[in-house]
Structures are given as structure tokens and as C-alpha cells.
Image (cartoon, rainbow, N blue to C red; front, side):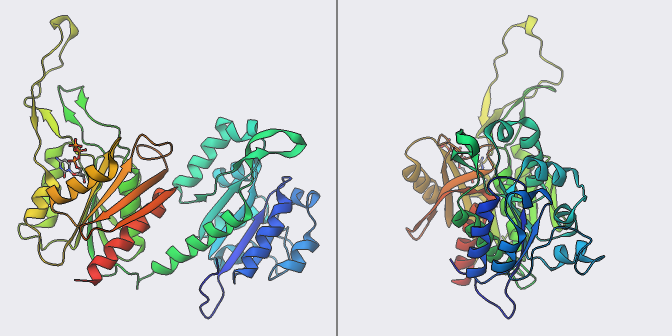
Length: 412
Ligand code: CTP
């Protein structure tokens, strides 16, 4: 897959950690250059034990670097990070991940990672025991939270004949990830394809109180809704995120924290307005409780009093309410989390709720839905079209949903 060339090729810093998979970084380097990118390799000191810098010198767009004290020192340590459109680290060893998560800057690669504001693509590779260690997984979680894209390792033969998880992802997958990051970056900027649009996103599962300490809730983590809000902001929209979660929200997004279906309904109604004039797009990713206790006990229920009988009442369907007040040109997106008859049930919801798109996911499938960082969805349109998005990051799913939204906005 080749990158669309502007006047300047995208500037990619290729970080190479000290693992046996460093030899595959040579192939990654060659493919990135072939795909039209300007590649600046940065090796760790120890990476040179696995592959020589001369190989990268010959294949990359500029000579490989190792130390902050060489070449155009003393500013090389920030120059590369500032110039980069993407920093890709392959292999990202346990050591590099640990230093990056801690924000250390003790060599050129980690200094570049701290100095850059570009998207960082991490491609871990290590032995299975190291890959599965909680320290490594925690470091990756920290880096993901800061916006890094992770290309997970594959399962297969490792150095020394061992077999297991931890083998560097195929170079083709790594290059694809870099191309995708560059493509979504090209859509972002001030002239992004949602510039001037007001987008309301809801996220997370509502919590309906039984008494002051207990709630009825569901397994929604809110991650997919947050990813949609972040992608919409990146693409230039003015975004309001109504969320039940305490997940961090990047600057530039207005956030309204709520807990119950009633609070969520009020927050949405305030933003949408009585005539629907308040927003151009509504994405209802929140998992709103369908039923809530009729009454909330004012003091804690105690077990000595025996099992309580909790009477439930239906909550108002917020999305249906928004659809009933919609104004021409507005785009409404609902979600359907299912465990069976995915497409039929999602299509029925699309019709019943009167929305333009329903994003359906089979939450019983591995890696899909609640609390995962990945998702696989079918996006059903009122026009009968279905876009399948196979298992990928929730960020990529968000962009696929917004691609459909942008097309609908343009057609109205
Ligand atoms: N929704 C809403 N208000 C509610 C319930 C759901 O706006 N009270 C929205 C959700 O945000 C989501 C879509 O409707 O976009 C999900 O549809 P829903 O009818 O909740 O699906 P389920 O509850 O899964 O329906 P069922 O239990 O019948 O499968």
C-alpha cells in the first residue's frame, strides 16, 4: 500500500530496539521507503549487536543514528521528534517500552519519543514470558492511554526455538499501521472533513441506583464512544462528549459527566435542543439501561431485612426521542451490542429508532466490544448498505463510523 505523496514525503522515524527481531526492521525500513516515506532510522546502542547501522544507512532516506552526541548534535535529540509525522518502533523491546512508559530520555530513541508530538506506533517483540509479564503489559497500557498505536506481536517461533506469543508482527502489518496513521492524520488538521460540524457523542454504561451504595449497570467501558469523540475532534468537529466514565478526555472536547439514564437524557436534550438545531451529528454509543428501579431507597438496604424486591420501570428511549425531533440534514447513529442474530436485530433497531446508521457488534466474539481496546463491527445504513469493519483498534472503528457520517452529511 503506498502513501499519497504531498509535496514532502511523510517523515518517519524508525526506532530499532535490541532484540533478535531487529533484522526484520531492515525489511520494515525498505518497505516504508518503497511506500514513499522519508525514513530516519534510530537504533539503540545494543540494537547494533543484532544488525549493523550500515545496512540501514544503505536502505533508509538518511544515515542511521544511535547517539544524541553524533551528527547535528546537540539538537538532534529534539529535531527528529519535531520533524516526525510518525515514530514507529520495531522491535519495541520490554526495555524500550519500560523506558518510554517512564518518560526516560537516556538515549536518542527514548529522547525522540519524549520530544515528539507525532503518533507513536509500537511493535513489541520479545519472549513470551517477558510479553506476558504484568510490568510489560502495564507499560503498554500506559503508552496506549497516551495515544500510542500498538501493533501486537504474533504467535509463532521465537529465538532459540521457543514457540509462543511475542514474535514481531509481519513487516507488512507494521507498514499498514503506519500508512493508516498517516491517512487519519491527513484527514485531521483544521480543514478536516468534520470542520464546522457539531458532534454529540454519548459513551459508557449508565448506573441506576437501588440505594446509596448499589446500582444496576452493564459492562460497557465507554472506550468506543470516547474513541469516536476523539476521532471526530481530530477530524475538525466541535465535540461534546456525554460520558458515564472517568476515562481521560483530550483537550478540545467538551465533556459532560453523567451517571443515570435520566441525567444522560437531560444532557443530550440540552445539547440537541427542542428543534434539533443544536448539533449536526449524534452518535449514541452509550449503553443506556433499558430499565431502572422505580424508587431509590434513601438509606442503605441491609441483608438482615431479606432480599429486596426491586420494581423496575422502562427508561425513555433517548435515541428515539432525538430522532423524533430531528431536523433535515442531521445524522443520527445508534449502536447495537448483540450476542446473536446480529444483523437482523441491528436492522430492526435501525428501523424502530429511525436513525441513519446502526453500529452492530457481536459482544460474544473474542476481542470485540466491552472493555477491549479492539472491536469488530458491521455498520448498517438506512439505505440498506452494510460496511464490515474486521477486528481492529477502537480508533480505527471510530474513523470507519465517521467516514460513513461524513458521506451522509455530504449527501444532504
Ligand atoms: N438507547 C437509548 N435510550 C435507551 C436505550 C438505548 O438511546 N433507553 C440507545 C443506545 O445508546 C444505543 C441503542 O439505543 O444507541 C441501543 O438500542 P437498545 O434498544 O438499547 O438495544 P438493546 O437495549 O440492546 O435492546 P434489546 O434489549 O431489545 O436488544
